[in-house]
Length: 464
Image (cartoon, rainbow, N blue to C red; front, top):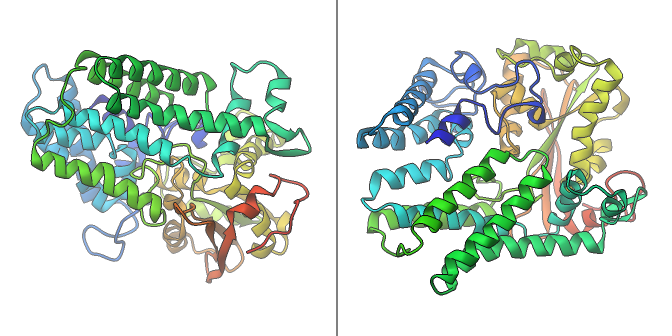
């Protein structure tokens, strides 16, 4: 409950420099309690619950959710009524603004709250939620994207001190920054470790299942936390470790199949059907409910602002100013460009970023006149929250911003790249102009991207 409150207030995933928030360092409640700020409605054309800006209904639902969460956390004996209210309020917030549902990390915090509300003996059900997190996170990494993630994460790790060890992750540093054989082996080991945690709990006989499962769990999350991976909420890893110790360590003998029918049906939907649909049809389901955490297979976008056209964003009601305006209070202009450039470099190091780089010539003719801004930064500035979900800064956000800012043709161009569906070999990309709409669309083979270097000369032509 504390974690849900922490995230909904904006202090977790959507805060700080990694989400381009310097002044102020949080978005969250500053946006969610302010009428007129931009929202991501599921059905923007519907009356009452639709629209593109937050209404008093949006604010009332959000404030009620925060109020119930605070009451639960501070109460010595929380009532069942608060649980039921939260089980209803969180998805209600999501109906009017999907940003709130995602910000609450509802795929497991809200799912656990519902289990608390439904089940008299909720322990086994909560164990299944924890097992699903590890299982789907491991499954989602069975792709060609993850070795590039390992390169970036391990290079960034303060535990890897030797420069030679960092260079060994790449084929030929600094000229060829594709993953080396060593990086691919490390990726395979990491996937095996993540999948081994739930399998150990489920398949090994007691008490070995608990001791082995917890040992593997500690190895996994200590490695993740010590690597300080870019964009990862480390407090989430603390929460998962704590949850595992409580659920499996304290009550290791709990029968995992002692679940009431209604609760079982709910868990099948949330822990099996939703993640499966999200992996098979990623354009339809956010990567968070899909439990595709840090797999490298993300939807993304790049927003290209011509000359000073970004000043039109001042028409938005928001708290976070243009990212360069935030940084200018701390650094000179060349340093500001370098810092934002690190976000661009992070994208290019992953496969979808290589697709973006090759699509730039199809998008704009006079590239030096455009400012490249990652969609994550735009979503954080406009919506008040961002955490790796490319669906929060796709065509729907572009349309909402255009209706408020009125960009002229050519002033704002966007490239959108969707995740790779499980079992399919391609990524779907789209190019849009804010004023005139779709420009181009197509598919790119993941195998083609694997053979491209992050920047510089490609080893093959870019084929679509």
